[in-house]
Amino acid sequence: MKSGVNGELLKKFVLKSRRRVRVRKRLKGSAGCPRMCVVKSNRHLSVQMIDDKKGHTLVSLSTFSKDGRELKKNQSSAHQLGILVGKKAVDQGIRDVVFDRGDCKYHGLLSAIADGARESGLKF
Image (cartoon, rainbow, N blue to C red; front, top):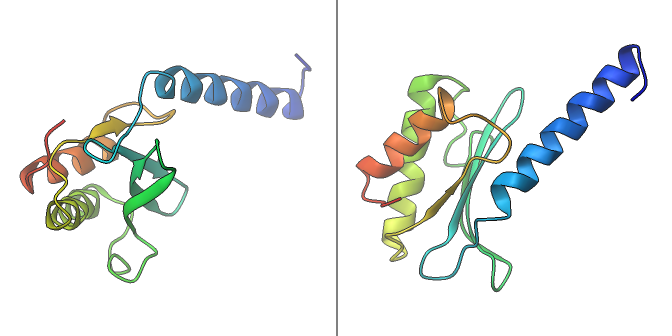
């Protein structure tokens, strides 16, 4: 690896991509049990229910979408986002999901989203 600022950024990117691949190689979503993918950016949170066999997004909600625009990136808003996405999924007949945390640790915002989704009736 290179040293310096660019080398450190490259190392960080490589480690994150390895974690992402390691987590996602075991997870496959289907129409009956889709993959619940959670993405954290610097300003927003995004949750999608994905059918990997067809390559379709079944349910999607984020803090920059029309339904979640009033939510911010904090614990209480993450919990509310989980509740909203869980309700949308239950309305479409989705009960079981596979939780995909990507390259992030399961704590803080991700656990708040998961707890909210469980409260609204999803099982994972």
